[in-house]
Length: 153
Length: 153
DNA sequence: GACAATTAGATTGTGCGCAATTGAAATTGC
DNA sequence: GCAATTTCAATTGCGCACAATCTAATTGTC
View 1 (cartoon, rainbow over the protein chains, first blue to last red):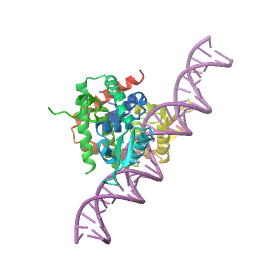
View 2 (tube, protein in one colour):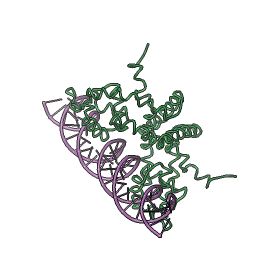
View 3 (cartoon, each protein chain N blue to C red):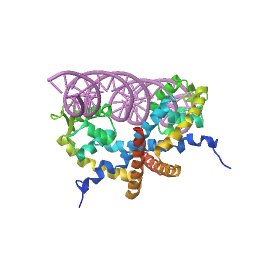
View 4 (cartoon, chains in turn brown, purple, yellow, blue):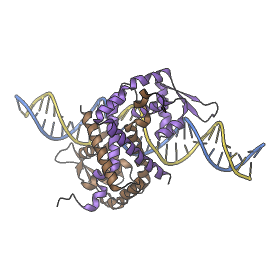
């Protein structure tokens, strides 16, 4: 019978790790996005922040972080770079001086139209039907949420 | 009828992005792995390298990179840290002086036994049957491979 | 009103991840 | 046989990610 190494090692084999499937797929997405986002002058995490802001802006950093599962250590420098690129404006809230509100500039709003080409290209690259992708996305989100539920014990 | 914003914006909504599902799931995995890997003294990417080496060591950096989809800019410093931790040894190949061969030290081999507890904990955290996880992994790997196929045009 | 506890964001330090460049070694093309 | 090309690893620089720490502002309790 054909067997690779010892059966006791199966749980430690790279190709059996779902985490590596997810990890490597994330990098593959990043590589496909890169040339598309270069045209917008955005990195992939910056693109995610812009997606959040295009839905609703003038929101505190905290809200963006909760949406993307990122903390201030990641977002503060990223948002400063977006501000340096004149895509967002950062202003202290007058109601709560602890908060910094992130608003889109006119250029930030305008970039949304150029961004509409991105999802189409990604769909083409994934070489997959929309319904299949939606089903997969829902499964992955469900897994992510179960994992996140474990973090807080 | 209930509609969120404009239908034309649906392709740009964060919750419709499969890439974000994958991206955020990768981070969720990382957070679940962290306390488990801390006990082994490994980061997650270092754990992946060790998985590769536990299958077969004495391999050039290039092979590890092809397996994990990582380049020398990532692997060289990572491998130097594993060497500093006395888990691997780096030696120039005598057959091809361009190559650096990575071999496990006795401690590197020994760590495999401690690592066996990791996949079990991950399975528990994912709160999912093995067959469901395998099916999902295969789908994600298939998507990743289609994306990677596009990179080379 | 005073003070402890909490919250928001910024900062620092470490470790990826990748593009671009470099340098040495091997392969090829003629 | 030797120049041109290719290959492999290392290096540099930039941008995440996140833990830990810090400061300032707000809330809760009395």
